[in-house]
Amino acid sequence: MHPLSVQTHATPAGPVVELAGDLDHHSAPQLRALLPALPLHAGQQLVVDLSGLTFCDSSGITVMIAARNHAVEARADIVLAAVPDRVHRIFRIVGLDRVFTTYPTATAAAAAWRPPDPV
Image (cartoon, rainbow, N blue to C red; front, side, top):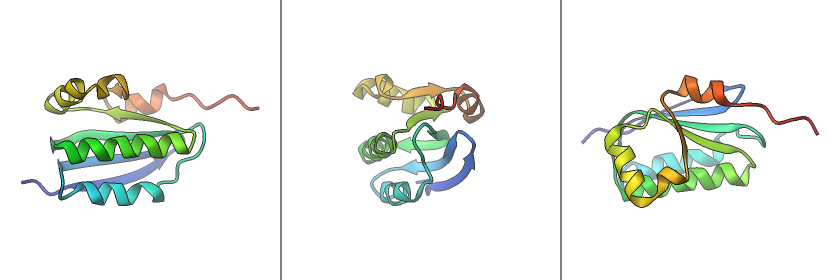
């Protein structure tokens, strides 16, 4: 078992959440509790960097969907970065590969973000 480590930092595109360790029924509440406190505004994107993720079970999948819902409620986007192959396989099996846009790195995700046009 690898305890979950969660680091966050802000970018002009929006918050980046870096996960390392196991995202499971023990640790998912930690990430879920963090979501409402993320400074996410309309037009931004939430980047979830999974490069350090070692395991993800159904509780982890549920909290990823909660993160997506949080972004949608903020009128923002959510993208995943550096999804490990074993996690990508799980996401593909349950259809989340069609829900989340993925990038090879958090830097690539930030570079792909475009600010919304002024109204």
